[in-house]
Length: 144
Image (cartoon, rainbow, N blue to C red; front, side, top):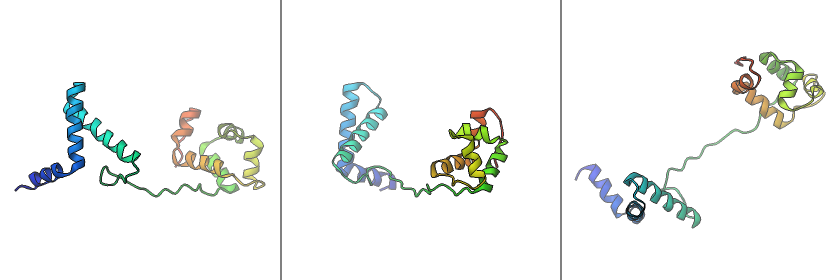
């Protein structure tokens, strides 16, 4: 038997696949939708039922996990000033953009205050995704 035929035979023997196919036929007949839409709806129904029952979704659908590094970088006085210079922004403009007082940006650049995590994350985004700055300010400046 050909590999494709074996896979189809195995799929038809799976109770979950049979439930999805039967539900798809019912949806197709009752709702007058295409077979593809009917099968997608039936698959979503099956996924929701499994999730509500607390079943593992692995095997039912593709489950991908990804490790994210979400801790923002550290920014000392030199780094804050370097970002501002790359943006060609005054302290007042950067402060207004970030929603802080001009004196706050000044104190970051002079080392009198540490840059808090939320502001560091915003600085990360300005460095990593320069279109944020260019779009919001209309500057067209690109940060490398």
